[in-house]
Image (cartoon, rainbow, N blue to C red; front, side, top):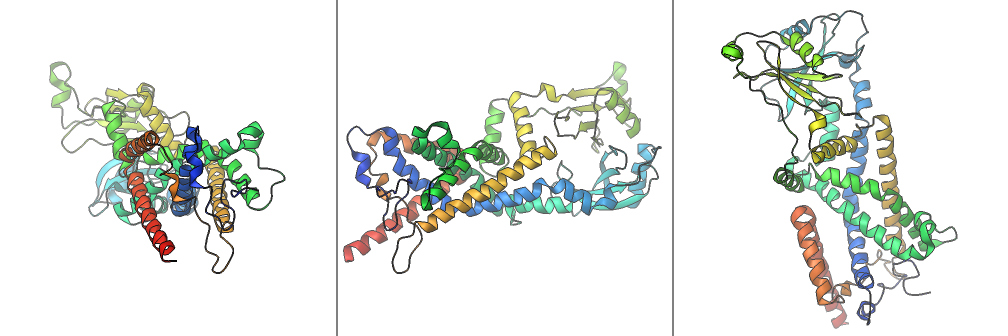
Length: 469
């Protein structure tokens, strides 16, 4: 059996394949790159996997927050279903009486029997993207409670807490680096691992790639399960990584700039109220047909399901009514309604979004477990559990590769001479690709540079110890 023990990793007591192997005449590009890819996969797997694991588990918890919210905040969210509904303006008035210090911002009418109406206020002292939500029984006008609501999704305190745990570990902007690090490296580790596994198993055709080796034992058996599981999870891991990066701190801004440059941004509705014949609409600033009439106009314009009605800004303008159902088929159409007449003055339909804006909307909603409801949640749960198993198998292999003898340190990586073994043209191509990816994904680029510096330092120390001995 060879030094690699037919597993692509070094046998106990060995560092891995001899670096000279990549210098042999007529070597293929893959054979030259493979040792470098093995080393990168090793370091990323050992050092970044804890961040990926935390992001995955906190994300799994977030996926099930809709059900958690319904259980924890049942009193605020649910009421006995009734036949009659109070006018929406009376429900809003009841909320204003309960929160006189707030500035009315929006209202989300009860969507289904047994739901409460959510009236949203801007209140001094709340954080960014936070509003105070007052919950009103649509049948009786009873105020059922008040909670802080976060973001356009209307996350209540429990979901908002879990969201921030997943996003930044409650450490503010500095903590967002952890989740971006996880999302930036996930696709690299996944793609590198799949490439190594497929190349190793290419002679066994499809079955050898998709299924573990039935008769393998020991380290080879662990690698077999690790590789096959990685192939099954590959598409899902790429999806979660890409969609997670879209709202990351640094890479997300690059994505936003690219979308703006290519006119892929999500269109917005105009809230400017145009003047009608003789300027009638424009001059009736003090006239307001009321929120009930506004909702009727939006329904007549085809805005169905759950909606949020945003009130005009203090300086004037139109109401906006936006669909908030992000399940399939997506209902996020928006119309603007003139306060003086109740007429629809502008509209933005999801069907008219640019393709990339649609894909972004679907990607984010699927990432959050919303797009396909419970089925989406179940798939993400299976993906996360598979990822946890994949990381566990990786660490188990790392531990089993430790050399025998006193101290028994943990497993060693492939030798660092892999880079020196590359011809100049391949070094240039790898460096250019790394620079391009590092520009688009700054946290990936910075962490890769840090890995290289640490690796060089460790190599220097090892070289000194060798010379002294």
